[in-house]
Length: 301
Image (cartoon, rainbow, N blue to C red; front, side, top):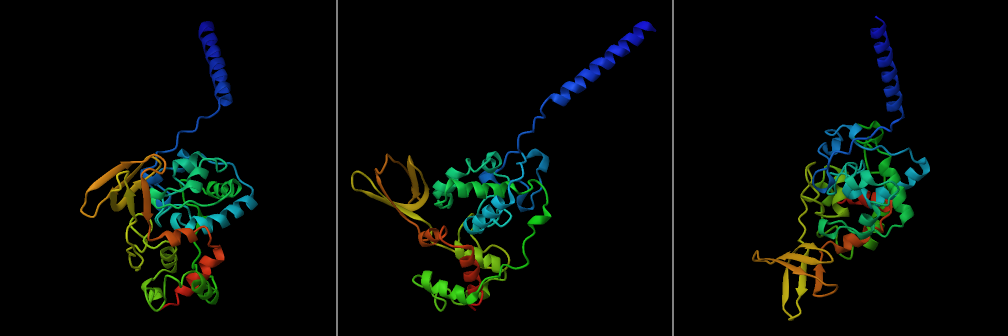
């Protein structure tokens, strides 16, 4: 009995010591679930499918910083990544993006924002590190991996001034578009004002193009093309597939593919982007401009 009691006593000491050691050992957070292509989570816009526990949670941010980031996001990012940052309007789900998940104060997302991703249709934005840090704070304020009632969408986005939108259209858009010409009846073609807003911000942009579902039309925009002038003087033209600092890939009209190495400005590359005017305006719009112009275009029937 004495040996048995001693053994039980020692066993109890070991259990207690082990429990204390475990209590002092930092808990290892499981690595985030790998996103699929373009950073999209398998749970889609609903935010499910991965379990919120697998994603690192960021400490609460100053509400004023989050508010600044929300305002910047609404103007610069909302048109592609959605008001809830879960994508679906052309851009990928940012809440499941490994870059965003790994980011702390904007240091990881800054290169993407400031340089853009031309091969994926993302323009670059002239934002400061401080502004990007604010956007990062807003993104990190989302509850990842589950439903967040605080992110419910407003019942309507038609909160702008149609008259102010008409004036803005005449000053910024009328040189290329006409409400009695190419945009005639535009407002009647969309059942959802938000879809109309996404479409005029970047017609045909994103994967599959805007105008999917919701009763709106798919907007077909001519593809981005490129002209490459080789050292011999020969020009190769076609649809742009990819371009970076090291190569340019294109496909000629007859289907012939080309991948041409680049060394600085050699060979000469000219990109012909039909949406270039829209891309230049994206960093310029204010939140008020977007709401006013949408309120006006809805009336064009």
